[in-house]
Image 1 (cartoon, rainbow, N blue to C red):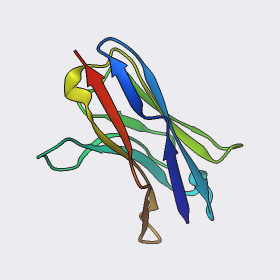
Image 2 (image 1 turned 30 degrees about the vertical axis):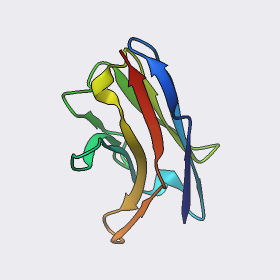
Image 3 (image 1 turned 180 degrees about the vertical axis):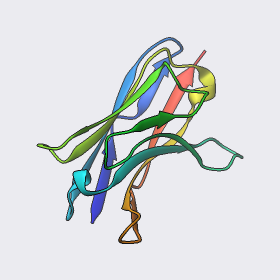
Length: 116
């Protein structure tokens, strides 16, 4: 299974970006999907997820600004990020897995930099 993340870049505070993560070798609808981020000097943190049943959840720091979604036809997951803040600067990773099967896969990460 391979996850290819894209869409990162440099944006001014208040701007928007949409991250994409295309999957190959498995079907995203068969498990959970999630986005994590890791800022310099900090631990990787879970910021958004969707279970196989479609239930979504968000970290408090991004709730109301970020939206996670999945396009089953394209086998791609997305993270729409609005009202970006400098604190959102981090490397963003997509994650996919199936708890029942005990599988978990990671994309390589894409850099998001928000300037003030």
